[in-house]
Image 1: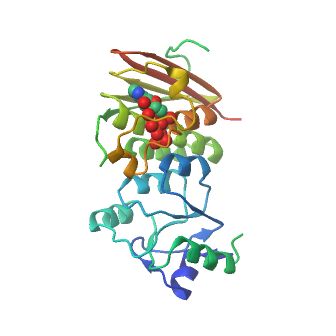
Image 2 (image 1 turned 135 degrees about the vertical axis):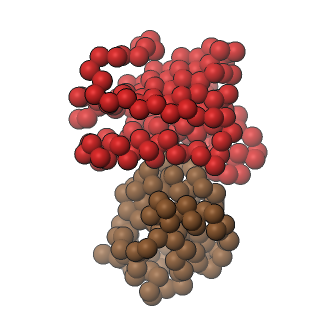
Length: 111
Length: 149
Ligand SMILES: Nc1ncnc2c1ncn2[C@@H]1O[C@H](COP(=O)(O)OP(=O)(O)OP(=O)(O)O)[C@@H](O)[C@H]1O
Ligand SMILES: [Mg+2]
């Protein structure tokens, strides 16, 4: 069982939003087409996307994702971070690309 | 397919939201509010999830493709009914619009991650009953029913 906290504590991920990172990650998914994500996303998903507009927050909230991971050092507007804080959605930033994020998640026990 | 009509019987709670065309900053807000209400009512998580997908895709379509419209939810003893009505432009070929991958979304909208052509198929998939009617120059009406079991 791995939590978002474990990711931030042990690997190259930075918390952008949310007070607590006590969310279990059960699976991972990467896609930038929001309707695909709506169809495929699951409860407690760690979702990797390069989209950084506020609709990713709606998707994450509606599907009850564990966290949203913005890869490759892509910048996120403070406005979006504030909104994520309001909605208690965990946004993480990382310099890693999707492949390396998946590798870490796999090694951490998510299959 | 059934005809679109609003079934006013046994409505325990009604929610109604006005959705504006091109309002990307607020797109998804109505769906999030609906989800919160359903959660407070302790409705089954799978039902909430299906209703969330249905309302979200409908809301986004109103923002992207329509002149604006309304998203209404009737919470009933045995199901949730979602009514989506807009003021045009209408859909010329509903069968084509319902096809996975078909989209008329602009490049700008696609860059935001919309326009996969999966919204209407997703809506139909999560609904126990799905009704869509449209008239070009008038508007589109959609009714989706999500049953509790
Ligand atoms: N309310 C509407 N009014 C007019 N046309 C619509 C409406 N909803 C959908 N359409 C048409 O049907 C097409 C398919 O809709 P659908 O939701 O499946 O895909 P999309 O919105 O283009 O992409 P996605 O939902 O995957 O982001 C749209 O591209 C649009 O041409
Ligand atoms: Mg759509």
